[in-house]
Image (cartoon, rainbow, N blue to C red; front, side):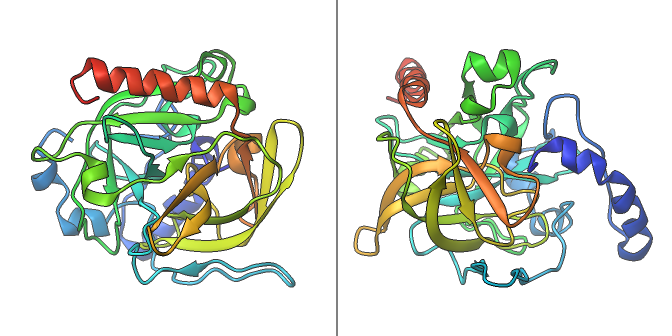
Length: 297
């Protein structure tokens, strides 16, 4: 599981680590994953980002025998348009990954539903978050972006149905610019095939930089896909599965995000995603409509 329950379960280990590392450690908030009071530019200085729990100084995932290995990116200049999600509270913790998806309003992210809404029995949406694209080692070269609206399907919000573990985030413009104007965007896929060659890029809690891996997806069920590669532990929920990536246009098509079954998987070697179909397209259209209603479409 790449969400808060696993993070909460690791609280004891984190408390022990504090004796050695002199860093803070927090448990899970009431609504899955997380939460500042000052302006973003002031609050998210490099010292705070470097101290964000649970980013730790680990720089390489160790693969199992015969298994693809993730590797750290020299930067996100390859055009994968990925960033880390952080809490906007006193902890400033990193907890998930999100990426820019093309939309008329040019201000839309895609992530896992469990990253932004606790699902059944929770207090609902976790709105007190920030998106930091191209984050690396305490730096925010593409700015800090604040959500305007969050969207998950009612099947997730009401019953935590893993077949609907996809969410969209409408961002506020930053200094008059839209996120898509700054970074570009990947298209949203919807053909619901079972095999894609995908680039998967995300931010594990064990590193202050993103990792990436390329492999084929496999079919798990009518509604779920699987991706095998080591290194995708806590913090990588919401990482986009980008297929048909073109180095020339620096863009591709998002056909999944880490989430779904077991909220993305119980091990760092195997990840899951909802198969994108009509329900995800409908949720996307709701987010696009919200962009338009806010004057961003």
